[in-house]
Image (tube, rainbow, N blue to C red; front, top):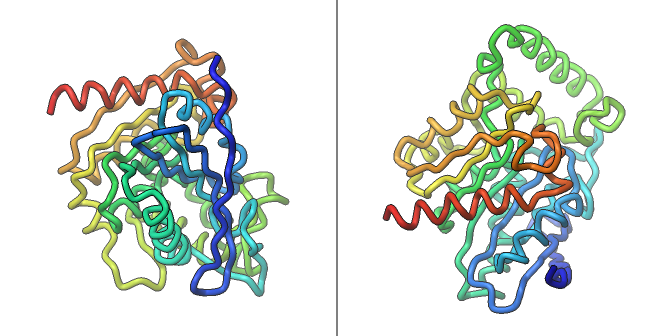
Length: 287
């Protein structure tokens, strides 16, 4: 096995005063860099194995630290609030500007896991400078995509909204589901979960219209044993991008070396990387 690529940290103070750090894994002479957005409440460092697996294939990775998690200077509370706006219209564009200045010759891919995949879908529609959109274990969170379980999911969404409004933030750590999140983040997420339509709270942008115009090719994987992402939700998110060419795959335990569920693949991510690279190869051959 090749030696792992060393980690470097990119720190930035944003225009609103917040400070955050992204984790960079850059193999020598790599041409492509995957910018990766994490699942709800998951710190960027938990994707280090994922980044190393890509680096061994000659692809650089920039692990996004979403606001309020990990190395972010902020923590959600009644006094500290944030939502999709801060992630998608402040942190992502400012940090991408820095990365593109440091690495002007790189080709950029964007992707994410779970909520990170939803946010990546939104940011790809806003930025337009990515060659590929990679979605792993992600889909639209609309409750109607969950069949007979949808009514229970609907109640849980409403309970999460109410609890967040009462406390002034979402107490994910106490609930053991996700991390602590800003009140506006939960409002943005719950809007998509209740209506099937994405919004960026406080923004005048029609992000659904932007997503519908996306032509970035999409590579996407759904795990057969994923209890959080339904196959209908997976397909519903992909259908929001009718103009984009897509390569998709459903993965079970073989060829994975772990259960094919929402998080287990992160422990042994090499088969997922290989599957995505194979999909990209077929896409290139067809073009």
